[in-house]
Image (tube, rainbow, N blue to C red):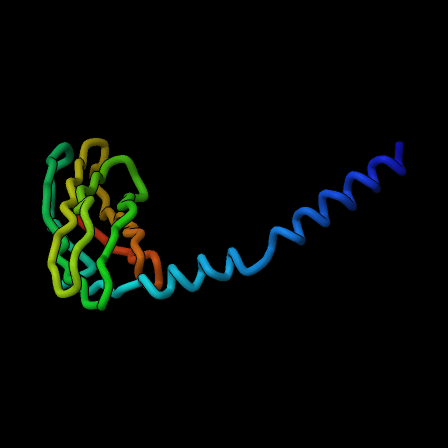
Length: 137
């Protein structure tokens, strides 16, 4: 039984090691060649003082400052109280766009909130972090 396990482990190890090769190197190089840069007008937005239950919306404007199309894969918030809408189509070099954030203060009261929005795109680094803040009464 032990001999069969060692043999199986050896075979799986050989398969795994043989799969590591130029194919993955080509993918990495391809991603680097197609990366771009993004510049936000601002990376933090303060909604000021809100009443608990108030819903506010605002936008983070950005520009593709690189030489390749900007492709935003996802935009996520670190809570369910903030929802972001973003361009699903590629943004050409020097093109502009915006990420619209909607924050629902329901359930927050008497606190200062700071929420983070993560933008995943073909940029270096691949994740850009945006922040929203507010005082909720």
